[in-house]
Image (cartoon, rainbow, N blue to C red; front, top):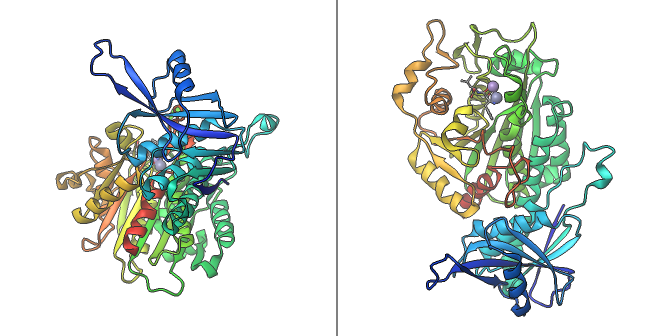
Length: 504
Ligand code: BES
Ligand code: MN
Ligand code: ZN
């Protein structure tokens, strides 16, 4: 865990992190740039540094981090902000802080002085620093001792340090960063060690540590036997091929001593491993499928974070959990299952399993009275990655206003989402000759078809968002900004922000 401190005094750490930006000089035809050190509210002597940076060929581009011997500190770390600006986008600051934090593994503390003028910018820097200070080494054996520890204490240097508002924002950043790192841990934990049952146990433990009932949190778990007897055919059907039996996890949060201003249901896809079932995935396509519970991890961790932030909103989080495996008990292509609520589905492709467990959970979630909205989060389709790439998630909806509100909030959180349509004409492709609907339809626009399947399980009057995070949930490429390799924790920040906005 990384702790955030605030300071407006002299720098006491061994390590000082500042920003570096570039300005393209108008006179130059060669594209030469001039560098600028951006140390925010801290005055530093930059003369000698500038020469060294020029000699090193520094570019100041995002993700460039340069470590040099300091004058008043042991190390001075310059993190790229890109093009110089009078007011940096908060996501630029968050990423720059994250990149610096990643480069500082092996150091226990550092002071960050970056150009943030307002409290929200300071919060973004704090978030970036905590998010960049992430290490997953639980499963290292003989190589564990070679792993260097990430930053334990981050001090943000700002003139605003004394203000009450900034203290609470720094605390929020710490909570948001810590719980995003929890999402990452859950995603990175191999399916040998994380199955539906152990997922529930882990969450129950964390809720207990977060204060449990005294924090307004309650956890309940439905076992496979209970799911079967109550008719959760989607969750049972997907989970029945595995020796690790399915579960439906519910965390409910209601604020202590305050009336909830809004009530949302958050539903997250929790496939602890997706082999594709009898529509077995090729080996390459299976490698990252321990991440198929990213949605479930995000909604659970977001709910706990919202409780720790003591926000006056009520959240019902639902995580349908199953392992999609191959065996003689697995669902066969063409099997018909009866979903919770009574709809029948012809399972033409057992690899389109996320929508089956989500259909059940969405119906169950809507039994809660007085919901103001429902949001599902899922690594649902490969088509999402084809459409938007690995860093932008999709938002689909039955309510434009809710979607626009969510998109506005992403400007605060810096999470990349993009609205996608649910074209009615694609719905016909989900018609089945034998059941109420089939679990696959037209291949083209597969992300939208999956969204349309889910839409059938949500009341038209209830504002609903479907977040497909298939690409962004798991980083199979290089680390960048505050994003490590592996689980990213995407969606948590905006789920929390939705609750913050509802509290206002
Ligand atoms: N979990 C996968 C989607 C996925 C793919 C997530 C790649 C992350 C990266 C999902 O269960 C799946 O297999 N979807 C199928 C649906 C198809 C059979 C209609 C897909 O996208 O291929
Ligand atoms: Mn699948
Ligand atoms: Zn899946």
